[in-house]
Image 1: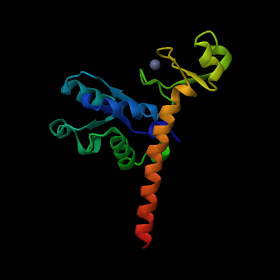
Image 2 (image 1 turned 30 degrees about the vertical axis):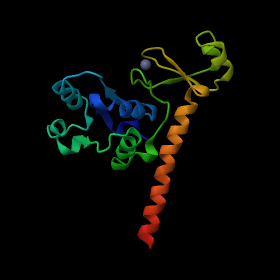
Image 3 (image 1 turned 45 degrees about the vertical axis):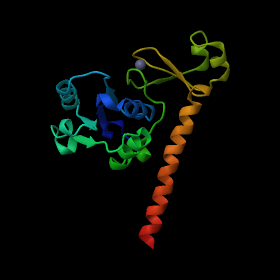
Image 4 (image 1 turned 135 degrees about the vertical axis):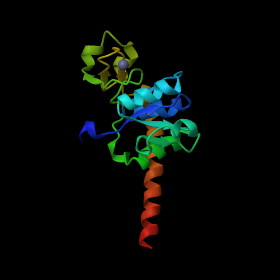
Length: 171
Ligand SMILES: [Zn+2]
């Protein structure tokens, strides 16, 4: 998979949870809890990002190919809409991106982080990554277990829906 072909997102202030989840799933996502509409549009434009918004007025300022109007106000539905409409279900790469600054993470060895994380994390974590930008360390294990469950449940709904659609088409 070529990373370059993946869409990048600029997410409207009111969609913080969606932004966070797109990052968790590995997509290049910029989000500001406070930003002027014009500034957000400028960033989206300059960086070739797709604008995700629930604001109709804002949405209409953008070329239809560069925007996605988010329908639900419930974040799992929002994530689903983005992945479905942009055909990204098979492109997710969970935990590949820093949740704080959006930078791609680098894998580091367990030994390398021994002095940098709490002892229980070192003991329980199996895979560690570091953000080259902000030096934050991420690990899989207890830290992510709750997220894992959510991702699994999101993907599980897809599967069900796909199967329903398929059987509908065949019948
Ligand atoms: Zn970072």
